[in-house]
Image 1 (cartoon, rainbow, N blue to C red):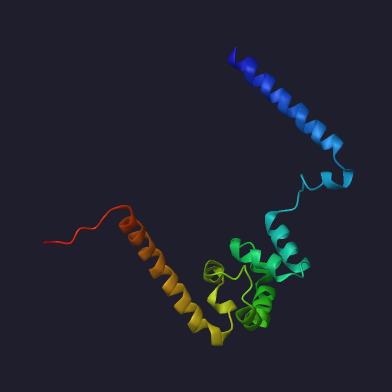
Image 2: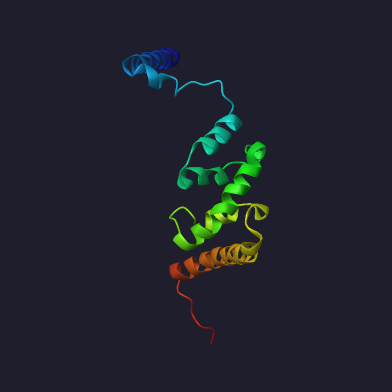
Length: 142
């Protein structure tokens, strides 16, 4: 009985997905299937995008995936770092800065980035302690 239910559910899913593909525009079907490896997708998306917000996503990816374009990434970061410091875009958070390899950041900014990373680590540890203190009442020792 259980296998009949599993078969019926699998068949229903297959039919639904098939209808989904048939009803969509033909040019969008290729977005569901590709033989392109992830490394190629990541490098192409970085190289083809002109928008910094779209390019910044590369820092969230494994560095091994973008090793072939590391020079391009370094050039992009170093060319724009000071503008980003001034404009403070939404995506340039402490978390994002922590993911940027130090050798990619301009030499003059590395010390301040190290300080940001250190304070973020300390703050995150303190945040856990502060949260615990909010939860329970701390009684002074008498």
